[in-house]
Amino acid sequence: MRILMIGGTQFVGRHIADAALAEGHDVTLFHRGVTGPDLFPEATHLLGDRNEDLSALSSRGWDATIDVCAYVPRHVTSMADALGGRGGHYTYISTISVYADPPEPGITEDAPLRALEGPPTEIVTGDTYGALKAACERAARDAFSSLSIVRPSYVVGPHDHTERFTWWVRRFARGGEILAPGPPDDPLQVIDARDLARFTVSVTESKTDGTSHTMTPPPPFTFADMFEVLARTAGAPGHVVTWVDERFLLDAGVKEGEIPLWGARDPQRFVLAADPRRALGQGLSPRPLEDTIRDTIEWARSSPADPSAGLSPEREAELLAGWHGR
Image (cartoon, rainbow, N blue to C red; front, side, top):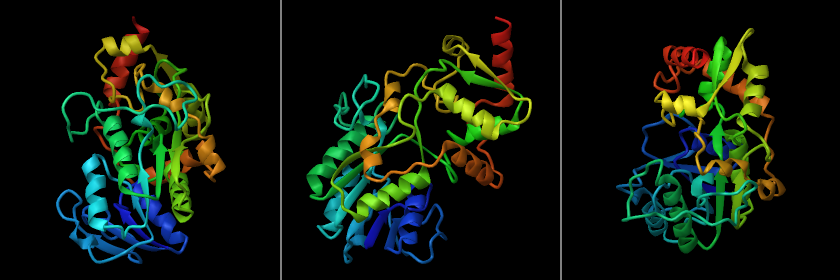
């Protein structure tokens, strides 16, 4: 197939481009040339910025388009206009965050979606992200007659620049006393970027219409369960996990986001207890979380950590001392 990738040089897009090339597809990457400009020399590279100039797409055609970086509806509609029907099947990478509050455990793809509240906006924040991605889905349904929507949970694995999962892998590998933010029974689901990539290429090849959850494992799986896997796979000898009550953390001034993956009883938390059976039936084949952790460790050895990610050792020690002395 001739596949157009919108993005394709950073994390999720990088893995999808790699998977498409591995399957022998003729891949064109439309990107800004900022991140990973030297990746995939075997692909065709078209430079441009979807916010400003899509003219590089004006004289070519493709069998399918995979879009990993549409965050506001205008991104979808302007892409459809630029392609003018020459983009083939459209695969849109959305998010599990599109669901209206409060989602139920075992939520399926047919649950109600978020809508923006207040005046229209293109400012992507923690409050608007899910609603804007839901609006992108609606725009895609209006603009493309052949459409796959892929809704992943937290995407993890090698080349993850967000450090959300990688920070925890590094933290367990460092050892010592590890602050675990409560409650331990909060649900959690992730997806290895490479498994997401293979699934995305597969539904694009088959031009599968519809929406699919991509995450693992099926519920129930909790923060505590993830920590157990991290402990036995990445934990340094002698490490100790100490669960700290969320109320204590909030009272101590810890902000959501300061501890990666921690939601502090976010009303959206049960989106991380979603039902992935549709995607599993379509061929999603998640690898064991242990394998993702090992590969992330290997990649992290040669990738410098983001010093702004997660709790600093000093802040973690301060919080643990306060917890023990409360």
